[in-house]
Length: 112
Length: 112
Image 1: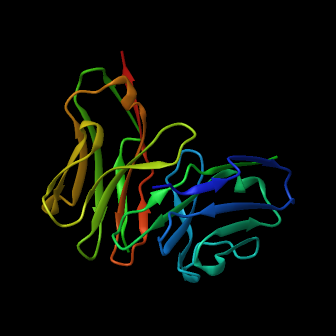
Image 2: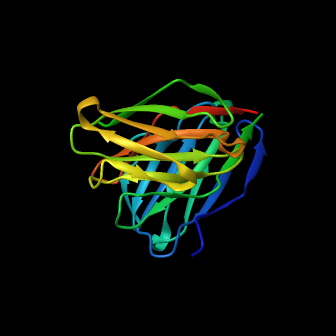
């Protein structure tokens, strides 16, 4: 069974630029999560989708971050404009019925 | 709201010694509890999970954890540390809504 796929693995951008991350969850997984992991910290939930609907986006900085999950499968997370404090690893995860999340390898974003 | 506290951001053990990583949770409902491991530049990999079955949970790579409701703890142990166990370990709690809350992580160093 293929795991959660994320791309790109690494991205370096200048502040005020925009960036997008892509995630393809495990086939059949209805729930998809985006987490932000700042160096030295645990992952923090940004947004949770159930199929193509948003369950929780209370911690998503909506003035600069946006996410969508078209057709309930792939998802993209966008940051526009990026700030220095957005430097982090962005993790995508998916889950099926059981409360267990499967994580992708993440995208490491560096904002300079 | 659910939360987890990991005591000790850094733990060092000698190769062959007991590994003990501490996790305490706060939950208003019976929780699901998890331990994840993260190797450098990788995503999170599930070590083990507690889902209200047996209180002693065995995971991969010789790790196990015991759910103690009276102490609100879910400490991770391994009888004999191996060099390959050096990584970051995260405790997480999930509620019935499948939202995951992570601790700040414990970095395990194994000394030869």
